Image (cartoon, rainbow, N blue to C red; front, top):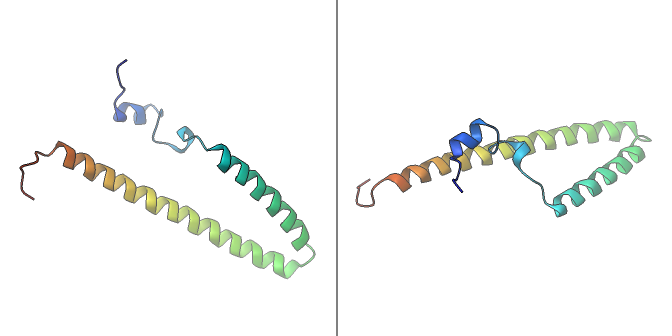
Length: 96
């Protein structure tokens, strides 16, 4: 079986995008539990409008930070992967 090159896989959306990453059963279980707990928490907080608003603001900040954090780690991993690939094709006796 011929292995498809990474560039071809990325171009055709086979790999290299969020949709191609399968989540573990453990992750899905925790995600479901988190959604259930947050729903209950929000329902309870609705009785306290000031706290509910504060929660919304904090939750928005946390989600934004998490998104940026994920991007930063992804970008650094991508950069390092490219550098690693360049090092792999470089002859071992080449000086820096």
